[in-house]
Image 1 (cartoon, rainbow, N blue to C red):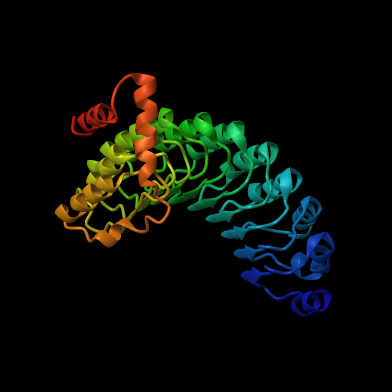
Image 2: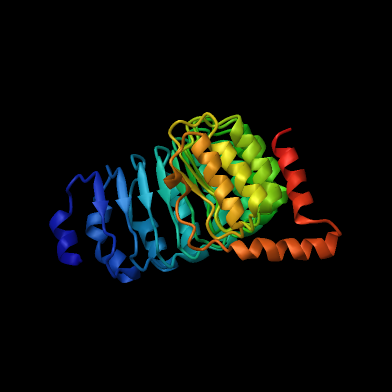
Length: 339
């Protein structure tokens, strides 16, 4: 590392990728000669490097200028809160940053809040990827306030951040006010329930450029799917992919989503509703809706993890609890879908 660093010392690099090396703090400091000599970097990649909190602090110390930096990626490190706070100082000095990724970095609430506050300085941001950290609700709320000020974002990756309903609702409400040209929204695995569906629906209606929406591994159920499906049905003409897998869906929710994606969406290519409990009859109805909407059945994607018997079991439980049949529940949901 020292030899490599010395060989390039003084070169005016625009692109530097040191990913997939066993660096840690000692490795970062081994690149000191190279890093200290760089004033024109536009892209910096440090993915899968064992970047700990101490290593992140060393980076912050050694990089003299990030005023021209446009891309900064820190995927798959052990950065933690301490490292996130250090990286946040770099963000504050990067007004031209367009693409920031710090996914799978073990960042908890304090680090998430530090990121969220520092990102306010990145007024040119287009792509933000914070997936697979441990932000929690409070960091999600702080991030929502920042998103209101970053209207140029087109791709937003917020899956597996423990946002829950409160954090997700704050983000949906912020996106409703800002980010007019959003193209990708991934917010899977955040324990989002039906309660958040109206907030997301209100946001979606305004996102005419949206190409991909991923809500996988949440708890939207049929009620949430109906609300989201109704919103999508009359908007989002550029939508190409919708992922509603593993959301406790049954027949009513699945068919409503199918109706939504065949309406005014000429480029739509993938509806993922795998990992739910949709009956065989429900799957056939979804396929028929797709065919009638002039979509190939391959749009439906894999159904290997769907559990058709699960719909019957869910229906029996609801019968016992509510004194009503599954058919009645689905009839009410269908009525909502067509209001």
